[in-house]
Image (cartoon, rainbow, N blue to C red):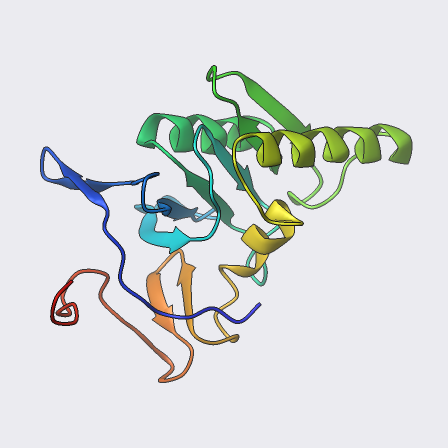
Length: 180
């Protein structure tokens, strides 16, 4: 999943940047699953969410938790749901209700019968789309946003990474184009 870099308008609130659903600039967070560390934060476009958040521990290559959402509260809820289950996929809906597919085996596999896993995955996919996502496969798209070796920008637990110059870059230290 090749991504591009670009500029978008987030919302600044009390000194922090927040998602902006009007411009489809949503916060993306990567949380290291293997040791305590501050989460890495960036922004992503084209997820289209108008409510809630989605998160997954199926995230190439390291399988950290990756989440996208419209608010810090929804993102935190989606992440915490996965931490409590040792991994999986989660959706926080427009009513802040949690929906989960637990993947407790390395955060990648379920112990449930395949029919239950398939049904639950289909339900979560439908929920993610009902929150506004136009993506054909929101969770699959999410899983590749932390895969650093595919250009251009990706987010790892260590920060924003530019796969074309193969180095970490700042989310906020560059200057937007004129007229932005």
